[in-house]
Length: 330
Image (cartoon, rainbow, N blue to C red):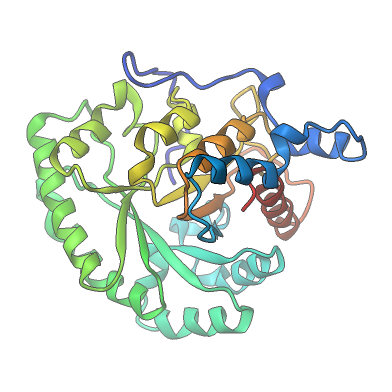
């Protein structure tokens, strides 16, 4: 997750603008402030009522949603974003926070001893590996062989660890992608999807801002060529691209098998924990239950470079995990 700039381009036709009204957002600080009051917004926040409404509509599948963590917040402080040296701390923190699993960064699986090392940490902390994030210049035919060779190395290793999902970013081009570039992008994606399937892994398209800006140009280009591809939206990047996450969930719900959760304040800066910003997670929760979402929901913490933490990361993970349970019902 290297794209940290806010993108103010708002899709002009089908994409719906994200709400910036903090009075409509259900945040953790609002939750704590009202927790002792009997009149506390039960119809909005109570996950049991949200699930009941979904069940009544026939949308809920009843399948448990796995709530995991992605280690970007650690990678952001490491040379070359390499989390290998801090993997023990990552597993310990996420296990302490009560997360159901971990989505690794693909670079952690490149070392020869990666499967043995990560497998031992996973067993020790009882934290399953559910998948990994992966990316490259998939739109650039000149880089296809390099990307494919990397995938052929690490996807079998992911499968050995029990991972079952590959969140894939297609890469940002210098300019708006041409039809030929979108054709090339789809061609390599088909090869990656087939490689994943041969190892029991499901590829999903993970977006940053560039895939969903410009009226969803990049994403629409892929969907036009691979209509059946699964989606794993990052809901915060949707917000930063000017796309309403609740609208996106309802629009593409049948294909969404995965999602990244992150929060930000009204000024656009990321909050320390999930629920301490102004993102309208109540609306997101309603949309997820309407579509009967039963995939993986992965918390991905991120902070601006000048941000000063007020608590240990493990506590921030725990607060974020509890917020997902309280507000989204997972």
